[in-house]
Amino acid sequence: MKYKNFNDLDLDFSTNLITWNGEVFSGIAFEILPGDFTEETMIVGGMKNGSCKRWFPSGRLQMEEHYSNNSKHGISWVWFEEGKLHKEAVYEFSIKLREKEWNLDGKLIRDYKIDTSSGNYDTLVTLRERYRFRN
Image (cartoon, rainbow, N blue to C red; front, top):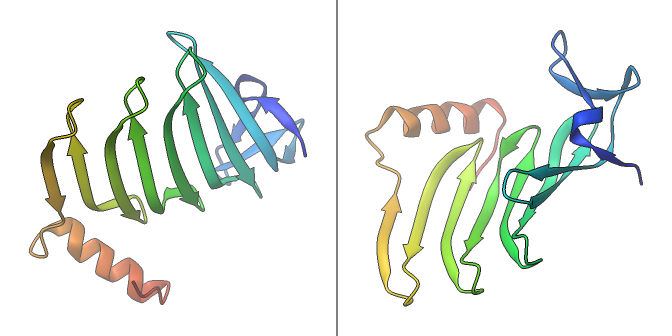
């Protein structure tokens, strides 16, 4: 498994694929973000495919989300540094279907569900039909 710094990878703008030394990249890309957060992203066939994880400088997991063909797809979580769950969301084709958010005391402060009369929902239906995806 290749393990490369994101800064060493390139984006081929003609194909929108991530490459390394002119070849489509598959492996894990890592990055040190401002504030000493660390992030790792699974790249398969030049696209984000699989999990993306970010850690606090302390080493505790801060975020985990999943991608399919460069789109957020599936469940994602965000934690407070103390380890308590802060947010949980579900995505399809990078469209947020639902999200719950808690404060540090564990109280639910937001409970979002996609509005079926919104433009995002219409786009989701179109994508599901195009790719024959069913929830």
